[in-house]
Length: 435
Image 1 (cartoon, rainbow, N blue to C red):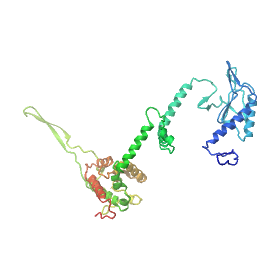
Image 2: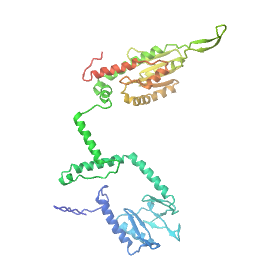
Image 3: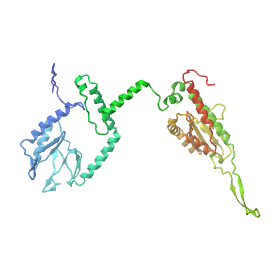
Image 4: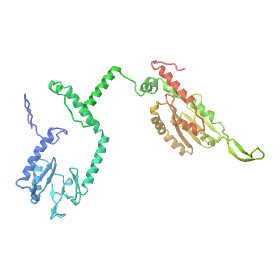
């Protein structure tokens, strides 16, 4: 094979195994070569008579899939085709081939065929799918309609998931833009019309995209979804390296630990009162049973009275030895030596859109420590807590305070919000004195 241009002709190229996949010339050359091989294998064999005046060529092929349909001389034609393929340094694959022999309208299982010195399986032994259709020994099409509907449904679902629609739209928009912006005056002035269906028009989509680009150029870069605030209060590398986020975290932690430490020693008695019944005029009265006036739900801290609260902060109680011997440092540890109970609270002060992600990360981080404490005989529990950088209190924080029988506290949220405001107000200052 060689190519010629107006100026030169390249040397001959020997075509061998290893042509690059995706080459546009390869399928054309393959079809041309297969046509020559099939014509040589067909020889003087006549068409296959199907009855009723209908006939069919003895050899049919679709790329590398070849079908032999013959009343007689089938073995000779198969041998001839096998020899030609070997001469072309190709070969058939018996494992992927199937045979079907019909005698007097019934499947003949006794007749078999051989290619490349291996026997071909029959469709009765192994059904085969060719060109989207299954072939088996029953030779019936009763399930064909149901299979077609099922295949169509699965294919449509796959198209919706693979993003083929977006690829189609991008290709049409790219083609329209290329034609409209062509350097060829004739192509540019034709105003091509591309067919895209009834619901979506490529010209309207391209015009809308151009208008959006013009508007963006006029108004410049804008802030969306409060990302500017979020980048400063949660993602700024300068603030992270200078410890501004750690300072905010410790301020919120100090407030949360103080609330828990104050509440751990409180006692919540349940008051009772007797109901008094009187007759009309107050002539006679009697007392009913006692009913609780202030019913208190039992919390995690009500099981014993020797709770000790420690926090990963300066001037606070140190964590118990069973925690300090590990490499992890929970923010707050509530420990009872008499009942061997440990409650670990881990504080996060993320941007509000990342609260769920931060909660899952902290749970996974302390999962192994919780299992290790339980193996040592402790009743361990880890409770991640999220207080948003803008003061939004997550449901995990309310859950912790509720389980500890502590009422709602606004100071933790105010502390997070005020700290973030301080970081934002000094976002352009490189060196800060947080004190």
